[in-house]
Amino acid sequence: MLVQCSRCQFVWCFKCHAPWHEGIKCKDYRKGDKLLRHWASAIEHGQRNAQKCPRCKIHIQRTEGCDHMSCTLCNTSFCYRCGEKYRHLRFFGDHSSNLSVFGCKYRYLPEKPHLRRLVRGSVCVSKILVAPLVIVLVGVFGVLAVVVGLVAFPIYYICKKRRKRSQGSGRWFC
Image (cartoon, rainbow, N blue to C red; front, side):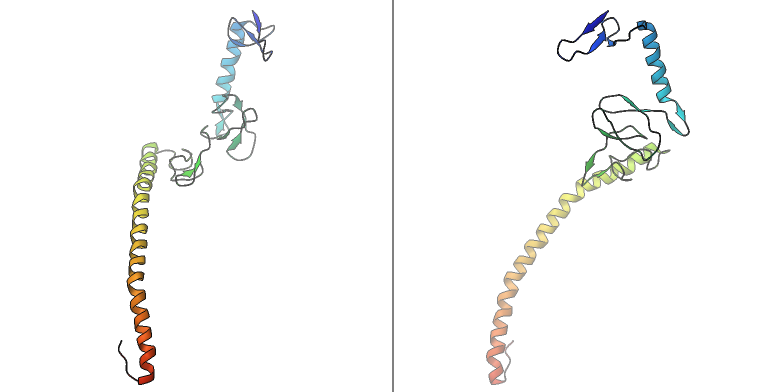
């Protein structure tokens, strides 16, 4: 049974809730969809035939080039090898970083997922814990530098004045 949306004019099959498939029975259409999913997940020449966009879920086939893909439908950037969306946080790294929690699982220790998660998690936790410590230490050393400067500068200034006065008499006080 054919149904058309009054807003966007999209035509779809009411029986199987799929885009309209004229001349094809719903059963055959679902079988074709199943064949497409099977073909997309099959591995040929060391890679999957197609990868799903993580946002709109359409299949995208790569014929050549790098792993960075951009969906033409929704403009989402994702990795062809693992199917994950590209994320970039300056402090935590991005998808091409080996030690980032957002890094591609095929880029760093692909055969040892538990070790990869342990290493990446440890790096992430250490960044989270060490960053505030570094900020506090920089603040403490900054305050110490100001305090030492406030104490040392007047002493230096007084000694310099005394030295200047004593140069005329030939005696040194500092």
